[in-house]
Length: 265
Length: 309
Image (cartoon, rainbow over all chains, first blue to last red; front, side, top):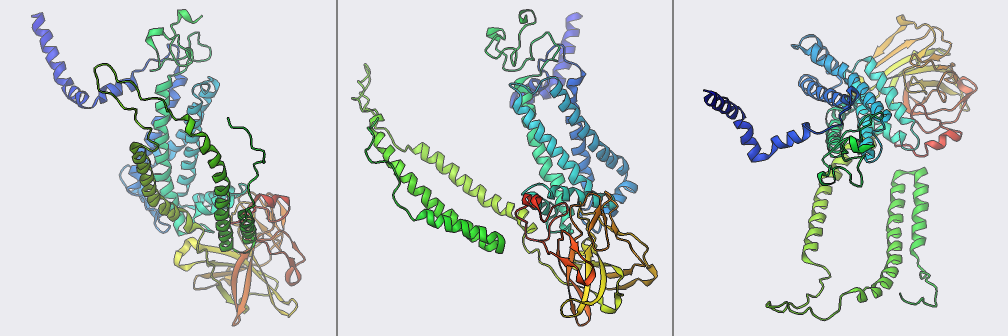
C-alpha cells in the first residue's frame, strides 16, 4: 500500500512539474530563476534589506499602471486635460489606476531614498560595490526625471506652471542650462510640442534607461552578494564568487566570499 | 635603445597652426555675430587642427617604426616534432585576416549605427533650436491705449499652435516722446524674471472696458502700483524694475512698431534695470534670456552662450 501511495504522489508531482522540466531542458530558465531567487544571504540580514525589492516593486507598479493609462491618455494640448478627466471619472476603475500611478510615483521616490539611506548607513556602497552605488544614483536621477516629466501630463494649471518653473530652474544651470531648458520645452517657449515631448520622455526614453540600469543593478547584486548589517559578527554576504575549495578564504574573503561564522574571528 | 640624436626634436616649421588660430578667431567672432560663422570657424579650426596633429604624429610614427623590426622573432625555423612533418616557421602576419574582418565588422556596424542614430538624435534635439522665427503681432489701434495707463494685452504668439501659445503683455501708452516726438510705448512681458510665472498687475482692472478682436483681448487697468508674482513673491514697480523678492533683473520687454495706426509687438528682450520712466526711460536692451539668469554683472558670465531664441 505504502509503495503504491508513493508512486501515485510521485506521479502527481511529475505531472505537475512536467511543463517546468520541459522548459528547463530546453532553456535552463528554471535553473536561472532559482539561481536568481534562492541565493545565499547572510543569516542576520533584516527588514531594511527589503527596501531594494520594495523599490523594484514600486517601479513595476508604475510601469504596469503607466502602460494602461497610456491607452486612454491623449498627449495633445487640446485634449490632454479632458482625457485625464475621462480616465478619472468615466473609464472603469480609471480613478484607481490613475491613483495608483499618481501616488505610486511618490512611493517610488520615497523608497528610492530610503533604500539609498539603508545602503549608506550600512556601508554597503564600499568595495567592491561602488559601481552599484553609481548605478543607483543614476537610477535616482532618472526616477526624479520621471517625476518631473510626469507632472506636466495632467495639463492643468498646477502642472503647467510647475513645469514652467522647473524648466526655468534647469535654465539657470551654468553654461549649458539655457540649452537644456530650450531642449526640454522644444523651443523658446512651451509650445504645442512640449507636452508630447514630455510624454515621450516620460514613457519611453527614461523608462527604457531605468529598465536597462535595473538589469545592471540586479546583476551586480547577484554577482557581489548582499552585505551583512554593520553590527554583524558574520562576515559580508555570500555570492556566486564563493570559492568552495578555499572555504571562502580567498583574497577577497570577507567582502564578497562567504566565510564560515566560526573562522571569522 | 637608440642613442639620442644631436639635433633637438623640434617639429619643422608649419603653417597649420596659423590656420588653426584663424579658425579659432572666426569661431569667437561668430559667437558674437552669427551661428553660421561660428560653425565655419569651428570647421576651419577642426580641419587645420587635424592636419597639424597629423603632421606632428607622422614625425613620431617614423621614429617608432625604426624600433619595430628587432622585436620580430627572427630565429631559425622550429625543428620538426618527432614523427610529424616539418613545420616551417610561419612568417608573422602583420595584418591577419581575422583582425581585418573584426575591424571591418565593427566599422561597418558603427557606420550603420551612426547612419540610424545621428539623424534620429538630430531630429530629437535640433527642432528646439532651429526656426525659432518671430512674428510681429497686431495688438490693436493706438486709440485703444489711453495715455499713462497700463492695458493688459493677451494674444497668441503663434495662432497656428492654438491656446498653448497665449501670452500676456502690459502695454502703456506714454504719449508722444523721444527724439522724433513719435508715440512711445512701455510694453512689459508678464514672465517673472525669477522663474517665469505670470506676474499680475497690483491694482484693479476695468473689466467693463474689455475689448476683443481676433485672438487679442485688451483689459484696461484702473490704477496699478506695479506688478507682483504669485509664485514666489517677486515684486516690480510700474517700470518693471525689481523692488522685492527673488527676481534677478527687471521684467522683460517687447520691442514694438506702429504701422497704419496699429501697435505691433516685436521681439522680446531682457532688461537689467530701467532708469527713468515712460518715454524718457533709459533701457539697455540685453539679449533675451531665460528667467533667473543675470544679463549683466559677474553672474552673467555663467551664461556665455545663449541658444538662438
